[in-house]
Length: 410
Image (cartoon, rainbow, N blue to C red; front, side, top):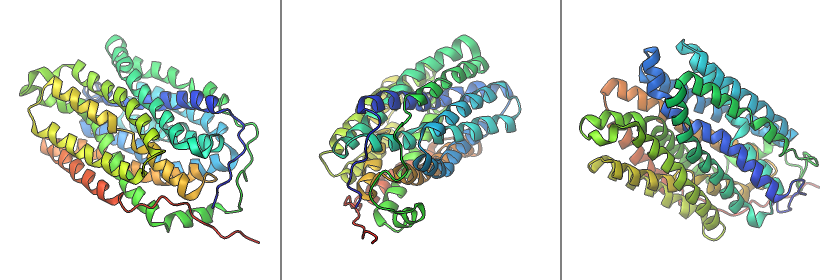
């Protein structure tokens, strides 16, 4: 069992402030990509499938490379990883801005930004947090960091819409690239001066840690649930604005750009309260039950949104409910991983389980565009999201939150 607390080289206040800022920038910028869907595809004469494929590839690369980035951060420290991530993020946004060819656009928005997100989002920040925050405050602190990402969404959605309206898609992306470059100085504030690779008791290797996690049933259950999380949130983030625009022929009031912008901003606003509440409750209640309730609540909210008559008010209510449940899974899931396996390889193991999340994100983003282009409707994807939510509710119930007891080597 890895119970010893690592020696902190950063204060908890420093980790929360600058870790929160890193997540605010990285998650906030990406949450607004859905607003660029129609402006970019219409300007270049592309189908929605092209934009959806770019975002889907971005999420797939993010998930596939995250365990590798996490292992590097666990081995060498997170500082250099985050500096490289900030630079790639800025380059990717600039590449999206100047690309008129679908392949170049996909490489910039999919490959470069996907790689950047592996180094600047939750897994790396949570690794720093796990090493510098006491265990009895860890899930709470993870909730604070997740709430920072939610604040980024709330802040950046209207900001990105304002940039789009004032400057157009190309210049808006270039300005976002300048914002992304602020992650580089933020990384310097999170540099762990006393970082040592063997910062916890035990001499478990990376290979042994991977084998231990993959063979653990609870880890597999969490991985399956995280797939659903990725599917639902990315489908909604990318395709909610086009969905509302399509239904404006039946419900004219929902077609105004302000409705989609407000809805996405509300998701970010209520996600602040949701992730913080999840962090607080996760310190007191079984986290597996909270996860099950979140997934079931999403399915109920989506069902009501699809079946009931659509209006700006119903859209805002749906956004508020989904926002409260949006990223609440993150501190709970990562908290369970840390509780079971310890913090020595937390960044890598969080990255591994996050890969499943990003497979779901790929499916949610791509299937939304693919099935729309082939059926003219998002209905099938909404139905898939509902069914997956029920599945995730059930699969999280048997998770065991007990720490692993390891036999120490002589």
